[in-house]
Amino acid sequence: MRFYVIMPVGADHRFAAKRSILEKVAQREGLTPYFPFDRTSNIAFDLDRTLLVLKDSDFVLADLSMERPSCYFELGLAQGLGKDVYLIAERGTDIHQAHGRSQTRFYDGLSSYEQVTSNILKTAKAVKPFVRLTA
Image (cartoon, rainbow, N blue to C red; front, side):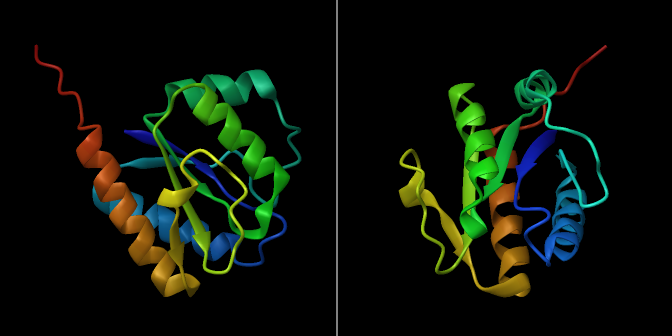
């Protein structure tokens, strides 16, 4: 199962640490995160590619910390496609997204980030169990 990750990148000095935590938690759950950008990427936003990858993803994890407009834009695309979306944010973040905002799970720092994301990935995996193909 692959999930699409929406999160602040360049604006978040903890991006690399958060990405590492997500990769570790995902590996434990047998899931594959898709990160559309990283700090070293010079790739321009490509709407067609983003929609294609979102459609192919099993669910979306969206970190709305830092209230980045680009994160809300990607979130709107995912919700418009009818994807299961799990919202997280650092405690104290104002959540401007109306749909699903009451289900946002908040974290306090990186240790709490790991716990919150781990719980979400377990939940998402249970909601969308692996499809096993038989020969």
